[in-house]
Amino acid sequence: MIETRNLSVQYGAKSVLKNINIRFDTGEITALIGANGCGKSTLLRMIAGLQSPDQGHVLLHGKAITQHSRRAIAREIGYLSQSPQAPEGVTVRQLVEHGAFSGTRLFRRPAVQAVDEVMDRVDLLSYADRPFDTLSGGERQRGWIALTLLQAPKILLLDEPTSFLDMGYRIDIMRLVEELKSERGMGVIMVLHDLNEAARFADRIVALKDGGILRDGDKSVVDARLPEALFGAKVSVLPSGDGVPFIKPDW
Amino acid sequence: MRSSASGLHVTLLACLAGLILMSLRFGAVPANWSDVFEIFAAAPGPEGRAILELRLPRTACAVLIGAYLGLAGLVFQTVLRNPLADPTLFGISGGASLAVVAAMGIATALFPLNASYGASAAILPTDLVPPIALAGGLTATALVVWLAWQDGLSPLRLVLFGAVFAFVLNGIVMVMVMSLAESRTELAILWLAGSLYARDFANFWPAVPWGVGGIAVIVAAFPWLSGLRFDAQTAQGMGVSTRLATPILLAAAAGLAASSVSVAGPVGFVGLLVPHMVRLIYGAALGPMAGGAAILGACLVVASDLVGRVIAPPIEIPVGIVTSLIGAPIFALLIRREIRRQSA
Image 1 (cartoon, rainbow over the protein chains, first blue to last red):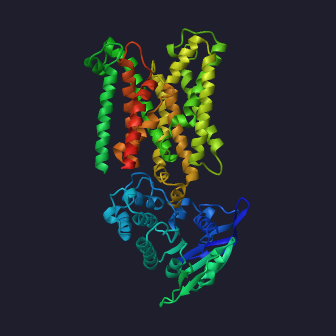
Image 2 (cartoon, each protein chain N blue to C red; image 1 turned 60 degrees about the vertical axis):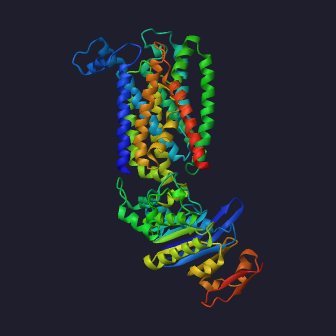
Image 3 (tube, rainbow over the protein chains, first blue to last red; image 1 turned 120 degrees about the vertical axis):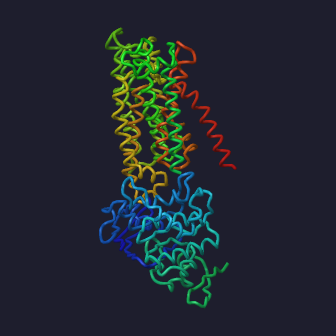
């Protein structure tokens, strides 16, 4: 559904992404992992059509993403940045309603039922009339996800969706992502820092290093050598009993 | 939510109606309520005619520029996500002022004093002032946008270039005012203070199409405006084309602000203050806020003009000075309230 062709980006003299060729489809959770500054968020923004590459193309349904209108892209791809900013004082409902922009005709308000349905899906319906900025970090993250769900995208892009959240909310968000994949057949591409989260919840793991793709595969990609290759960190891999590797840093 | 917004609209409209009636009733020339309602008669008396010919067009101008400035201020603050953004920040007022003062200077050099022209424009025909101001305001805005444009418009770049440009323009205007002959300096300062003195329907009607056009654009682009309240990436992610939306909405707001400056000169604080007041009254629902900004802006300018006329008759305090004197303390109170709310 989305593919990149020879995607390259430079920030000043630093080459962040070099000739990246990769394809993403629906019905699959992909984790983008790598050291800070390795280009994970840049790649995500390019896939969303929010940033232009210096070279190469992003194709959406085989057509250059630049040839799609912003509204058309939003109907296919939901994007959530690392720290989105909500307008001051909006209620949860007012925030979520903005997700209907790409699919609603001019001067039409989004259907209340559709807004209620996505708020209910992320367990925020009872908070609908509360000011968004009074919610906890995890509740806010669910509110943002509800906004993107209202766009009814086929692929959801999440830039570090569990950063700054406590363990309870991290599990909560990751389970929600899993459910969205199984219920709606959505594709999800997430930038993650925690290799254990990636190994536990992602179907596919793409490790970026030095502007290129170091590894691309299933959970088995996460082994004892990967953290050292990506971060220079020594780790042990513990057996978890269910086939998912568990990484323990050697402090 | 909707019904409460409608109720607030009705309340504000009732306030505006009351202020309009008071603006028609009170002023340097004594009149009573029967004189005010005489304007609807086929043959009004002398007081009724004075109200019809002097106070009615002046009040209409006050409603118009108040509504334009209130709405333009809301659009500027929303698009730029900056609570201090207002038409003065963009060089709209500075550009209009520079154009008018420059035209006064040129007229002074070219033509001797012409007594046949109106009192406020003894050196420049009154009907020339609005188009000159409009052209100056829009040119200045276009220059700010041109300077700030780099692969699209960033709110921060626009605000910074707008502020720098406004300072430069104000400096040039001051130098030009000082270089005018003494009798002309007074007229220039009166215009620069923002005054509705001697404004009639000849000033009012040319500004109407700008308002109709600007408001139509803002209404049509309203979903964009609402989306621009988010950070740029989130707005784009939900389908808002920020590259298109930002310049289109800013142009509409600049048109409203520049046409209001063309009617009365730069009237300060309305575009800055009104969006804060409507946020307080209507909460975060942008649609009701936009309607409220237009009505409240009109209320503020009509009330300020009325105060300026009745406080020390026959001397008139220009409306721009009254809006600043009323607006600055209210703005300071709002900021204090906001600081207390955030620290609570």
